[in-house]
Length: 340
Image 1: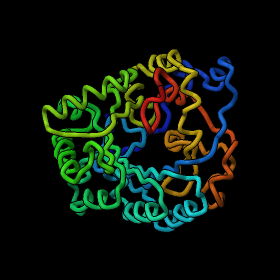
Image 2: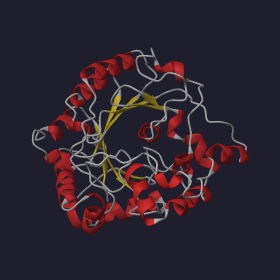
Image 3: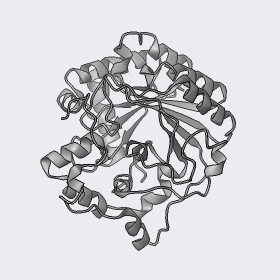
Image 4: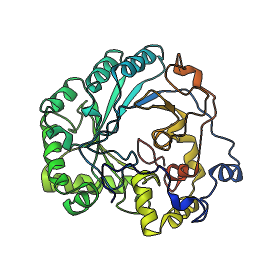
């Protein structure tokens, strides 16, 4: 793994003439009788508040780490909130990072979005609950009924620590217990706690429903932990995971795996049709993955200052590239898990 403080290129040097060109996603859509992707009504605003994180995970598509300095300012956060006020169709505010809670504007975004009646999601890595200054974070989330979507790539310590760092599994289990004590994850509780699985290596996730049953059984029996749903996500061939594929010489094979498992039935449910992603600096993207590749929104409004209301995006063309096979392979993959 690259050092967490080393910025990696979004795409690999091996792609520049030293390895087979990845499949063309647009051509694949056309061969399956699907036209260029276009946006529907925007119902989810995903806000990436920065790249600072207390972890440096092997698969991280954000290339986040403890010494990254990119952080959303108060000016940008205020503009995001104004756009939310002017966009009544948006139902969900999905706050991510990095570890989004490390941004000083995280609580402002969560509380003000909640006051507008929006459903707020925190993409939490769990161990952040034990960082200095975060002692009351779990209680804050519960008091504001913020949904937690937490990454836990396995229910065994060896696999989690291999992907996320030594000791992460133990801290994650203690964090889940803490959240359970506050009411998160309990049956019929309004405090939603969902977990995220992603494969350890260059493979597609197993069936989501079956894996969820395994997680629930193992976490309940071993640790007494309860949660609501498990989401399976495909590892995206960008940033750190792309670097691993390049170092092992398996980038082309992984891209072929994704392309060969293209499932046209996933296209209708792609998150980019109803989600817009805002970067820490206010730039707009069709999804968080496009953001990390610096592929700007395909709708012609590059920043939040150029977009008075999100309704203007409806019907606009979505920017795509070869990494989009990651969302359309097999059962599909999105911020809400499998698509089929």
